[in-house]
Image (cartoon, rainbow, N blue to C red; front, top):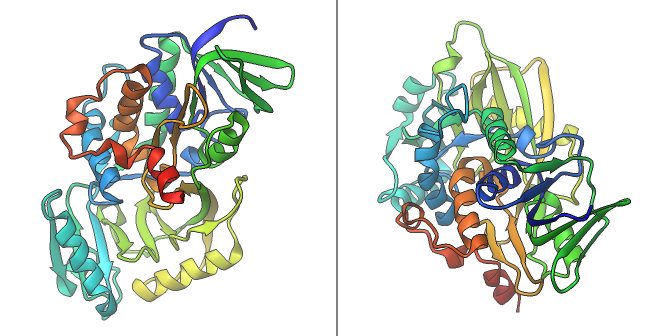
Length: 378
């Protein structure tokens, strides 16, 4: 292949697909994916919510900055709504109320959240076990995200802008010759002026191939399962419930209940599979909190959520490898922040100012830069 692309994006999950679509509006872009289809790993296994009060401050800022896109995507982007409203409740036992009150105070200036008592919790979610919860935080700004519609929308936009997608392209060598990058997979070689590393759990490995700094990325397995809902309860109107210390979450899912122990088990990048112990923990925590009995598991799966130590995304050019851009470490927030993160990254990559509608959400770009991780490691 003799063509030189302006940009090569590695990884066709939501991060790679969204930034590739944005970049393709102005220059030749190639998107490479090691699997047979995009989104096989984390994106395709996500039970994503749009939750403005979820995550560290930079994530919350990016989530708010993504709201307009989710509510009003570009014409033709999706045939269905990207968001379906669903309240979010962070719940606390009596021994967790300090953490709950701290979060409410932190979010007071950002989101329309309110503290609700045990009776209000049970009124809003009749499956709560009596005596379990002391209080909760209600966030009426939550919604479910149609992950597939979002991902496919970006991929379609990328194709419409003449972007080229290569699947089954597992990079064995990544070198810079002083002018362009050479991405090698078997006998195939792609050349590009700039590389965007959106390789998810494999991002640190890709960075090492490029001679970039390590960012301390840790893939963490999270397990989820769906179970039958109790009879006589209209689960479709129930909120998403998340334990304040993230020991579990539960939400309606296509007539069933999706439950998770909200585990974060460090592991090497892989095709993550659920562990029986995590499933047991999940069922135990759910049955303690809710008046339900899990008799049969309908489906079970696991995915990798990859974090750096401060749990904020890594967005910016490498301090070591020339023309090599990090777009990694989105953790469990990659779906809800994708629109703003893609636009922010595109501006930084192309040397343009970051859009003001993103910056006005109190986003400090230094909180995303890979430089912060290199400095903190010294």
